[in-house]
Image 1: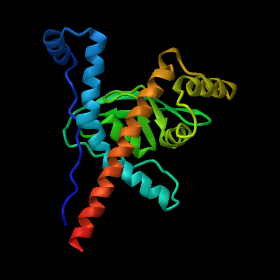
Image 2 (image 1 turned 135 degrees about the horizontal axis):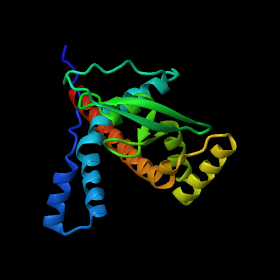
Image 3 (image 1 turned 120 degrees about the vertical axis):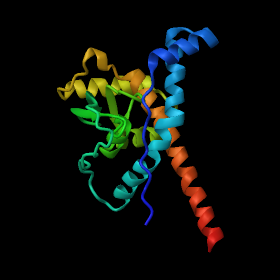
Image 4 (image 1 turned 90 degrees about the vertical axis):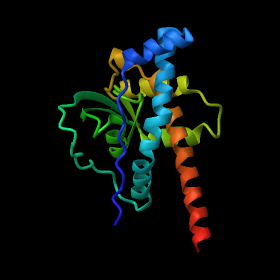
Length: 203
């Protein structure tokens, strides 16, 4: 039986990448970070999340509730980085701690928990997949407005006693998570269509 390939995100060297961008393209520091993050999303993170997200969908289709995933065994013998992540749900906030290393990248751990990261490497905030699915459906029926949604959610959570810390402002990070989540959904749908076509040809 073939062993399923483990996806590994190679952590970027920010300083080297920024130096290369500034020399070659004369971009601002902010634009360099944005360009580098976009490449890590496209080349590393999104492909690595295809199977974990499909596994999450299978659980939903079976009517199974989400449970905490088993810990990922580290094979790189590194201490990793301990990171606290603010998890945003429809009715509350949670603060979870992740032990991040190349064997257990943050995006993989978060998707296994039913969350989606706001950044590709060391996210400070993650949004529940249920919320992203709901907002994606909502924006099919009305004009997309991430700012209004973020402001309304922030106000609603504050009334429930859940207040964002200053560094955890929601709007920009929610917009990033929503955009990358929608890309992931399109990639997964394309992969499913491809496998259906292959199966039909084999039959």
